[in-house]
Length: 267
Length: 267
Image (cartoon, rainbow over all chains, first blue to last red; front, top):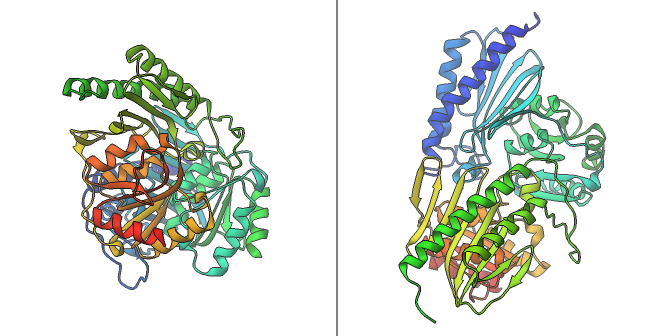
């Protein structure tokens, strides 16, 4: 597998920005409108998908097919399209569909790119609040309001000073997972629920110190890995493996915090 | 007590918009910066207050003192200043200080005005996302993005179809309150946590159907009452009394939903 050059990275990043722009135009007209919400086949829990979700992934896939026709694509709505290329785009058009349906802005469009086993690019776009977060090997950055800034996690290294979050305590896959999370959060300074992808951006910004979740798909988390790591944070599964495949995830502002969390979650 | 004229209402509304504008300028430079967070004296739980919170209330109080010198003022940070006037402004400079500290945009500046026992004006301003919600006897309105719209609650009239929210389950004052909330939410379609004042705006927008909270102060809720009611919703304490004084609050998209919620919360 050949190395990825700086100019290639720059071209991929430009593509991610362009895909965020075109998907935003598709999604925004649906936000805070009356939208049809239905249950996905084969899923027991309430899992709304909107036209916005589907149409957004369509325009992103069309862009990739045109611009990078040999690359693989994994998407939330339309599955995997695997080629011989070492490059694979991973797309979640609306991460946080429940927030979206509720009119809350705590959702985002996730676009990531891997090269072999390495997640080389990640982007989260929130078009309603006009916020964008992205990362490559050059660092993690955010653009909102009139500013663009480099992201850096907090200096928090102790659970007793940590702000911990999970999207919703009801989303834990089983009672044991929920109990382990409860044990961990009791050791922290403050717990807050809600957030989906937005929470990982707030961790990269230095405002949240610890995120614990379960049941994530790869497209929910892979695009966020570079954001957390390039901002100085640590992210893995509860057993310390790579977060790329999803599952039980822990993201922390520091190695010490991450280790303490893993230890408590292991029970 | 004399009636309030249309031109007086218009002048009060203009004032509320101006106060939202000037407080936004004070608050925004503090949002997502490193801020000092400390515990308020005499409160056992974690209750961050920022410089932004205090400075915002100061500029709002200065505005009222200059523009409406005979009116009473009740504020979160600097207490009550009661005059002989029938008019009383009620101000919460940053409702959702925990969200603010975490970098989440789900906080707002609340400004309300009562005339005798009637809450005649309410406004919620979220300057980071550039959203504003307000209501008088003329109706409830929102401004965000490029649009201004009249607010209308959802048509939801059944718990089994309702989206219910509370800011945080840990905020319930005691185990009984928490248990009653649990019983209610089990009957609903979906529960989501987090939101503070932002949730009442989403209810007025028609995206959330039910909000249940406890331990609210009058300044947390009084400015939001006109928003809920003028959008067609119902708001009261758990025992059906006026929500103006705070305490245990239920807000619902319809009378039927409100009655069902009260019944279950009564145990």
